[in-house]
Amino acid sequence: MARLPRLVLPNHPHHIIQTGNDSQLIFREPDDYQQFLTWLKESTREFKVAIHAYVLMPNHLHLLATPSTAEGLAQTMQRVGRYYVPWYNAKYARSGSLFQGRFKTSLIDAQQYFMLCSRYIESNPVRSQLVSEARDYPWSSFPHHAGLRPDPVITDHALYWALGNTPFQREAAYIELSQPSLSTREMAVVDAAVLKGWPLGSDAFKTEVQHRAKRQVLPAKRGRPFKIKSAE
Image (tube, rainbow, N blue to C red; front, side, top):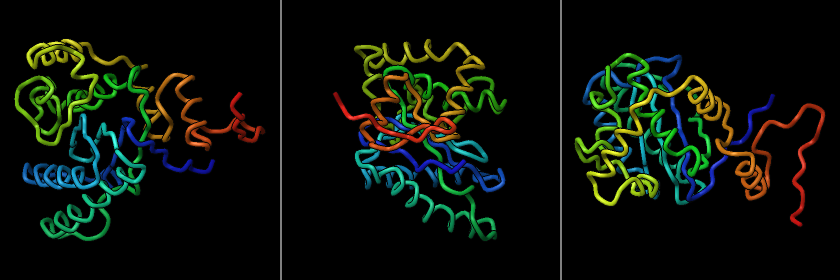
């Protein structure tokens, strides 16, 4: 099946994943994580992309981000790569590509799936058994959302602000929201969407996206050509 073109809609959140080439390490030391975050912060400001949640794992990374333009996500990731990859290669006396092809992304139905994606991203270190609690992992946005320390990379989403009227209320509500482990079904839904480039949302959301984008956003049914119906 041919790969669908990457779908990006301005002013909507997107779940992004970038992996190391052949699952190799892309971060080895604390300085690597910090340097990547520095360039990520600079790049998102330049291209007007808001980062709402993230996690940097040893061999991959996840972002939950809202671009202001259709090109913003690609421009941000390209700029970070142009700085980080040569720096990393020089530091570890290596050459060649660091990341596995282009990044993958999934357009998110914020009302239904924003918080799920944020929890999915920030609980990654726990699922990978790097830490026992998300609060103990230094390279994610969970400490920011839990009120442990401010993170200059993060722009809080309106749905996070809606959790409470004060910072304490928001932080407490987010911690409580993050306590239950994600179900196997929840993880599978998020995984499938981002790895295959599908929108993550209700059927009505996917239909609306398909009409707005004026292009196919899901695999076509076998034997049936894709066709956008005209508006009534």
